[in-house]
Amino acid sequence: SERLFAALLYLTVERGKSISRSTIVRLLWPGVPEENGRHNLRQILYKARRLGVAIECTQSHLHLPASGVEADFAALDRADERSARVPESVGEFLPGYAPPFSDAFSEWIDEQRAQVHSQLRRLLTAAIVERRSRGDWARVDHLARQLLRIDPLNEEATLGLAGGVHHIGRVIPDRME
Image (tube, rainbow, N blue to C red; front, side):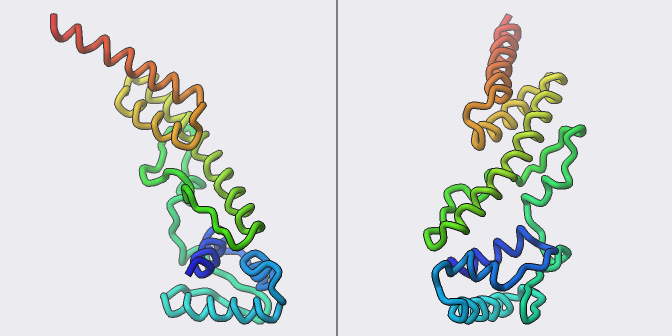
C-alpha cells in the first residue's frame, strides 16, 4: 500500500521523535475528515504491526524508536567530512518517488531529498578532493559519477572526471613505450 509505505517512511525519517497522529493524518489523507483519517491511520498501524514494526502508540502520538531503525541515509549523519569517507551504500534519496495522493507529503519528500542530497554532495566533494590529492583516479571517477547523479552540473565532479581521464590517458602511452 502506498500509504503504508509513506507512513513508515515518514516515521523512519522522523525516528526517535514523537509525532502527532493528526500530523500524519493531514500528510497522508489531506481533505479527508479527521475521524476518517484517524480510522485510516489505525488500519495502517495494524498492518505495520503485522509486518513487525514496533511503533509505540498513544492516544495522540506515534513514536518509532531510533534504535529500531536502520536507514542508509542515516549513515550520512555519522559520516565525517574530514575523513573523506562516504558510505558505499548511499546514493540518491528515493529517486523517482513522487506520491500522487498528497501535495504536503510530496513537499516533505522533496525537502528530505534536498537535505540528504546536500549532505551527500558535501561528503562526495570532500572525498573527491582528498582522493584526487592522492592520485586515486579510479576512486575519483567512481565518486564523481555518484555526485553527478544527484548534481549533474557539479563542477568538482566534472573536474574529477576530466582529471581522471587526463591522468589515465597519460599512463597508457607511457606503458607502450
